Image 1 (tube, rainbow, N blue to C red):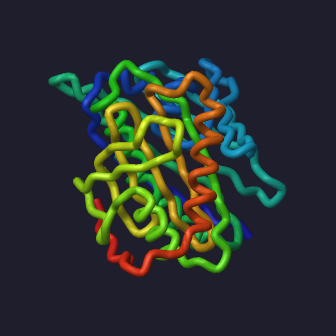
Image 2 (tube, rainbow, N blue to C red; image 1 turned 90 degrees about the horizontal axis):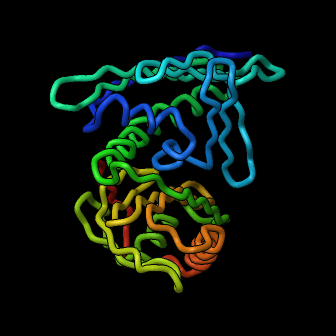
Amino acid sequence: MTHPFEIALETTLPATPEQVWEAIATGPGVDSWFMGRNEIEAREGGTASMDTGGHREESLVTAYDPGKRLALRTSPGADGRFMAFEYLIEGREGGSTVLRVVHSGLLGDDWQDEYDALRRGWPFHLHTLHEYLAHFPGRTAVPVFAMAPAAGRTPEQVRAQLADALSLTAPIATGARARGGPDGLPVLDGEVVWADSERFALRSTDALYTFHHGSGVALMFHHLFAPAADPAEAEKSWQQWLSDTIQNPVPDTIQDTTQGA
């Protein structure tokens, strides 16, 4: 049985409508703040795709009005499930822009958990979009994704391992400084710009980093604005770092007393 849903959000961004359009309606733009590697065919009726860890999802571009409106819709599954996304752009005085996002569709039998995850995730994604437009205008990023299983470990324990590897102490709070990362890459030296019960994010002079800690798994979604000569090697290095970090013992000194942004 399917269940309809709708999530609507609105945010003011420190960028012109043209800059916001580039960020939401082009592959390199979306790569710089959302998830995965993205491609968007610039026309109504075109195809938009997102590849995350080898999993590819495609959507139909159902509306394409540059600087004003973009809409996407996935094909329905065998059970009728689908997702639709609408982005509405409105310029404001002073060079800022209001972006309204509507995410709707049909979810399956476990709709409540999925809906709750989507509802919690969108404020974070829009915050990352704000960070991108505010701190990296005119630049695009190489996306980096990594995942490591953490069988038998709670989200709190995974969070503690990630925090310890980045020289963070509990509670992880916005404004805290982090330092660490893989050998052979520039040292991650950044500031916590988001922290909730599921993830925390850092901003450095050349990157946005996201660390997600779930039950039995750790994920990373990074956006590198000054990538290494070989982006594939950078992703490989981060994958190794994450796998090694999760294999380490859980620190006794770090407790999970999270603080939201």
